Structure formats: C-alpha cells, structure tokens
Length: 365
Ligand SMILES: Nc1nc2c(ncn2[C@@H]2O[C@H](COP(=O)(O)OP(=O)(O)OP(=O)(O)O)[C@@H](O)[C@H]2O)c(=O)[nH]1
Ligand SMILES: [Mg+2]
Image 1 (cartoon, protein in one colour):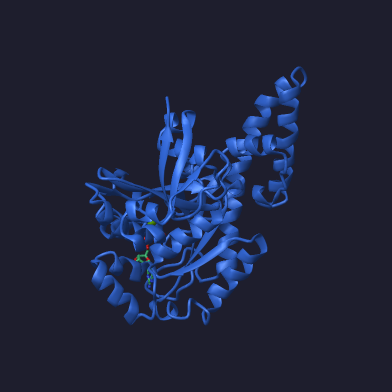
Image 2: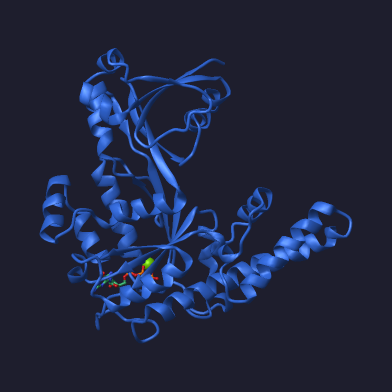
C-alpha cells in the first residue's frame, strides 16, 4: 500500500512524514528503507505478530508495510507554476490513496501561506489544484484517443469516459464523485492514475490540547469533518508535533506518554486504521519457524488469491488452506493442541479469508 501526502505548505506534512517513518521503523524494529528522502516505508503495527512469532520460535517477524510519499506543499495557482508548482504531483500519481493534511492549529510563529487558518478554504485550494493537474492529464489523453476514436470502438468508448470525467472536473468536482459502476470502466479509470479519483483521508493537524477529545472542541476540525462527511471520507486528528515526540520513544515510554495525554493510540495507529478502512483492507498471518508474517489483502479476498499474495505459484497450484483463528491458536498454545480440539479448518477455493486468520497453504506446482 502506498499513500501520498498533500496539503498547503507549512501545514506539517514533513513533520508528520518524518515522525511516521521514524516511529514505524522503531515500533516494529523494522529498518525502514529510505528509497528517497521523501519516500518512507513504515511497518504496520500489529501486536499479534510478536506473540505469534514467539509461539513458533520464528527466526524472523515481518510486518506488513505502508509506503508514504511526502511532497512539497501546493499553493493556489500551483498548476500555473505558483510556489514550487505542481511538478511533484507526478510522485504521488501511483499511490492507492491521498492523505490530505489540513492545518487546524493556531500558532503565530508558523506562517500560513494565505494569512489565516481556514480549513474549508484550504481544502478547496488543494482540491482545485489537484483538479487542474488531472485536467492536464485528461486533455493530453483525450487528444491522443480522439484520433483513434473514429476507427476504433474501444477508443470511442474510452473517449466517452474521458469526456465524462473532464466534465466532472470542469464542474470543480473530484473525479471520484463520478459514479462508475461497470467494472471494465472502473479498471480503465483506475489506470489513468488521476489524483482526484483516489480516496482521500484527511489528517487534521491540531495542538496537543485538542488530542484528548479527538478535536471535538476545535472549530477547525469541525469544519474538516463537515466537508469530509459530504464525500464519505475519513478524518483523523493528529498533532504532528506530538507525533514527532512519540517517534523518539520506545514501546513502553510510548504507552505511558499516550496515557498521559489521555490517548490509547498514536497518530500512526489512527492513520493506518483509517487507510485500511478507506481501502477496504485487512490482514492475515502466516507463521512457521522461518518467519511469521502479516499480509495485507482486500476484504472479501478468497483463499487462492490470498495465497497469490505470497507467491503466484501458491495461487496457481492452490489445493487447500489450513486455517485457524489467531486467538484460538494463541489460547491453545500450539497448532497440535488446536488440531486436537478440531480448531484447524481445511478450507477450499471459495473460502473468504478473515482478518486474523493464520493460514498454511497447501499447493502443488
Ligand atoms: N504548533 C505546531 N507547529 C507545527 C505542527 N506541525 C508542524 N508544525 C510546524 O510547522 C512548520 C512547518 O512544518 P512542515 O512539516 O515542514 O510543513 P510542510 O507541510 O511539510 O511544509 P512544506 O514542505 O513547505 O509544504 C514547522 O516549523 C513545524 O515545526 C503542529 O502540530 N503544531
Ligand atoms: Mg514538507
């Protein structure tokens, strides 16, 4: 999973990015790969992994990961070259979702590019720039496809969809507001990598005081929530500054610090929960002496396709899956004990994998 971070300049994107990549690396003792200073890989915190790894005496425990991409802030007119322009948007075209950081804190020491804090206006500014960037992509594509459309039925169909998206954007709406039911059409729109087609998760960046009640008494957060609810988007409240402090702590200190703030989870935990929810994702686990590992799949994935996440051979040669619920396994203390109680099920091709399933795939190639 890959997430791109957008927002106005100086709203806390890099502060958040740095603390997430730092914390994610620390929390699971996973060496985050800095592919590029602005791309970070974060381990998905999952308490089940360590316990399961201990049970199997695994040599290695591998968490699921999320890749974050941090880009420079956009300003009004970015598509026309204002500020640093929108040259960096290409870096987030190939992401699964957009994290839109919105400033919801007052601080006279931190300059706001538009002179005041106003989430509704700020969100609109960014959304418009994303719309303009997508329009450029569409116009180029339309120019190419329209030449073919007279001769080719497929191209004609593509042109029709492209025109429909263009009209939506010209109406100042995000592409994702367009209803696309047909799976083939959907796949085509997906392939365009339009920024406004991707789901968005709003990160409301607040002062530490606003964390305990989840931003309930912050009027800026209320404005973000109102806007987000119109498009059914997730909002999560964070303090990038606090997150930066949390990222310096070890697990135990982190728990204490969170408690002192009246919190049960960090911003990273919230962001991951919001992204899994937005993208309809869940995890299953595999465990053995060599490795215990978490795998991310879409909710509703059947056993052979889940196996294919591990290796294409597993999907091709799928025979069956030996499945046990994580909690059952932990309670029984070993797979042998669980088998005796009949808690290990043999599942076939039609089995829909559940969150927290521990699976051993049987395959033949
Ligand atoms: N008070 C306060 N200041 C913050 C918070 N988050 C970030 N800042 C400050 O805001 C300034 C800008 O933060 P950055 O994270 O660099 O902002 P950015 O969004 O990456 O900005 P660009 O890269 O210019 O687009 C820094 O001085 C941060 O210390 C916060 O939660 N509270
Ligand atoms: Mg930055």
